[in-house]
Amino acid sequence: MSPARKDGIRRRTELLDAALRCFDERGLLATGIEDIRRAAGASPSSVYHLFGGLQDLTAALLVRTFERLCRQLTADVTATATAGEAVRALVGSHLGWVAEHRAEARFLYQATALELAAGHSAELAAVKAELRAPIMAHLAAFGDRGELPDWTAQQFETVVLGPSHEVSRRVLATGVGDLDWARAVLPELAWRTIRAAIEVDADADTDTDTES
Image 1 (cartoon, rainbow, N blue to C red):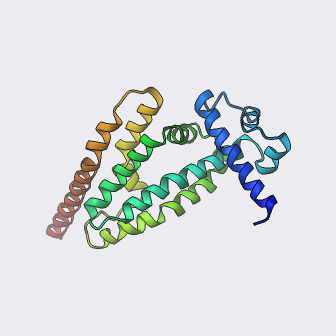
Image 2 (cartoon, rainbow, N blue to C red):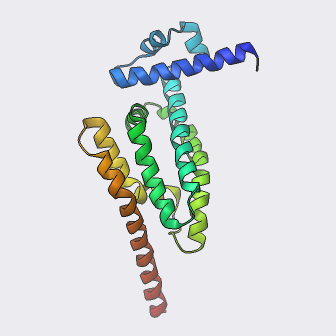
Image 3 (cartoon, one colour):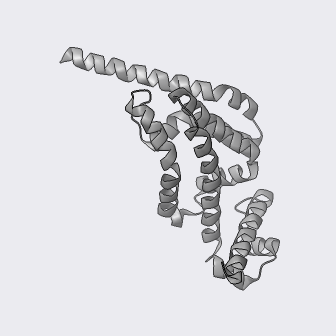
């Protein structure tokens, strides 16, 4: 790698780190591109060379945050051998990452809720789908054996991670809530919910067969 390439990567990382600090200290809506530039000690030309503006920088930080979160989720989920372990690991890993990376998690929830990178929505959706692919492939293997419902990634996230997202948002935004309680309770609750969903599907299939 050339020295110029290395310097560009280093400067990009410094700007993303500075953006995260500024967002955490000032809030997303009160932070401008100039605040980030000064915090990173970067020249105006270098900022606009690497990012077209604040929305581009925000989108890049979102991508990096998704990558870091999904890296941990993938490692924890794909190491499991049963459907129950996989579901519990998905919830526990998510809550663990939030607890250990609060500034990044707070930024992730706020930026997506406020649609600060709305112009990059298609790009971000594609990145998330690609990053989720190993997790969904692992879960699909259990689904093929009838141990998990045949759901889409969005359906799994709604049911399995919905309560975890809600607790995380509340804790990070207001300080109200208990992540330790969530980490102790929600993984098992998610698995029980999945088992209940499988039983409902089985009962529905039985009723259909009887009617036929």
